[in-house]
Length: 137
Length: 124
Image (cartoon, rainbow over all chains, first blue to last red):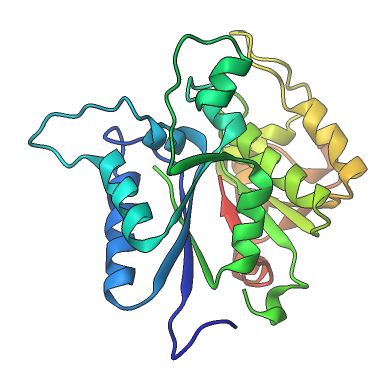
């Protein structure tokens, strides 16, 4: 185990869409709590409707938590990898610049630090991290 | 994960019926990819997930792809450890004998051991 002094490397799997389900709120709060206790949140994998978390176009009302910005802050502050399942994303209209070009779309909806990834990286996260915690609707 | 979990099978729990959203299909995708990566994979059908095994499932009337062709591919991916929750099966009037794939029935009290013997566990 790579952990030092009981500190663990975490991966989260988010399967619920932002705002329509509690999964995202719960995942973010769990992530903040584990960091506060000195653990590392190394990877978040967005799958199923969780891929909507990666939309750069999300514009929630100003008096609500901005979930997309919260993920971006995690990536910037903690170096957390934000992986978005490419198969789940494409069929839901979430494309980065390269995929948008490849499919002849007029705009793109995913940008770094969110990165389109294969399911293989989800399987790998389950093996390489100390803990894998799923947040489903 | 620590080395002692490396030999454990990866478990995918399927709890949604075909065409109940994309849960079943996206769960099966995880199983197929894990197997393609050389992992031993166990599938556990629970709740409405056992409907995936019901004979005669076809494509959805709204144009959704069926999942039986995917289940037919499991053996090709060396995914042969299929478990089905006995209670869920009985509640839906099904028995393992009539399922098109060989699935082992698991009693409620055996479920914790199945889950504890696997790592990681993905729940769909």
